Length: 278
Image (cartoon, rainbow, N blue to C red; front, side, top):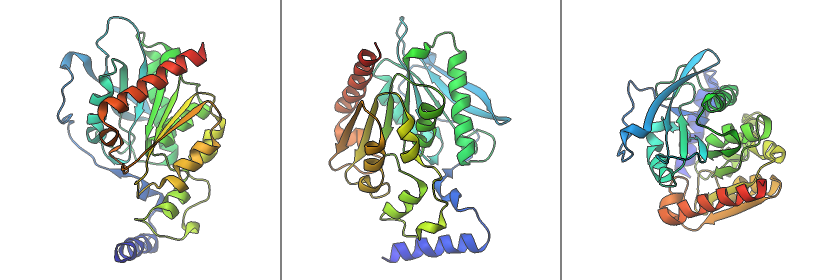
């Protein structure tokens, strides 16, 4: 209760000085260089890339599978914390599947220019997708989207509005900014303090035309399943599959599942999606 009181008081202070409440969704950190912590992927397979979004330069990493034949390409849209360095362990987990992967920093994150916003996230996702389409080593019909927490704002938007990917993977998505604040046990603020419909994954998911795999931790106390992931999943059209992970919180789904089990779930969904598309 005391923690909730402090958070609520802090947000009241922000509003009283005219700050944008949408900013609480972004927890970005500007850095001078990426370190790719704990990297085990050969340097020969990692390429730092840049592309433009709303006149700003975004930084990303293209990670090749290392296989000689063409394969799956995963567009990985990371969560709201710091920069893509924070999610490099996920890149390493998924690289074991022998797929190509693009991870990138949104405007205002890491070494990417600009300021974060909902419209900016959509523009950044478009820029990343256009970059993938520009590569002659990427087959468009083998692109999958993966959203992690905030990253679902990007990946679900792309799948709903821009392109039917081979499949969509959503990890701990929130239904909307309103649902996030009301469903969290960390935040306790009146619903009308956020504009209805902003960051509305629950609405956009209705318009996808691709197989959806949704993963959510049962113990996630930031994006609670019953108010968020459950709503997104129920709104999504078939085909879809749900993995609700016992004991997992908001950031530890792969580790709680076990890395081999996690990778097998992703791999099986991609393979089954290929069968559906054909």
